[in-house]
Length: 237
Image (cartoon, rainbow, N blue to C red):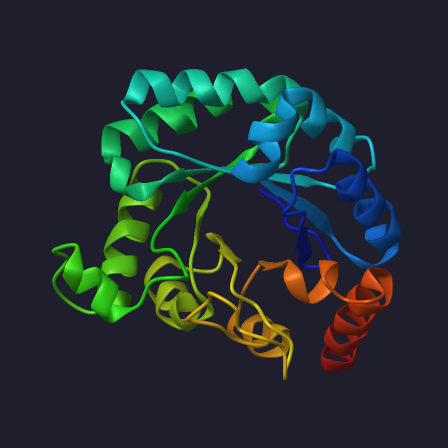
């Protein structure tokens, strides 16, 4: 398992392939990868993912697969020819489903993508958890699911920045942590509730930072991506 030197993965949240490609090409020098989600995938299919991959950056297919084990395994196998670097599934699908996803990815051999488990969406908070019948704190819920993911053979999890520290303590440095809900200081939080700045998240140990609207909705997406990258580089210097 390897992670990019530049931890910024830009979320290309659009149904417009042309717009996504324009963003990707403009920001390519300043980011470490690109993320496409269901919105993009449902509109453009595998061919659209292949076009994004042609830009030449690692691609995170944020599909959040969640179904019976056989169906999820088939979904993973179907995406392997596209050469994505990361694909994710919902930890809530259970151990058998998670193992099926990991085993399906392994059939790609050396080109195997990292399979990541979604723990708790960053749009949710403690009150949302309680409303769905989950007891305990958000941190306890995330740690429980992350342990299940690791035991089932996954490479890491998606988590909010506020769970980075406890997850590192519980699961060690070799477990990949992908962190959405990243907002540069002063940015609009939009629908995210559990957020953190890029500097803070990297300092705590995040491997990949998923950043979308602060880049793609900027007047100059390339300049916005460059500013975030430069800020991270200054922190590392």
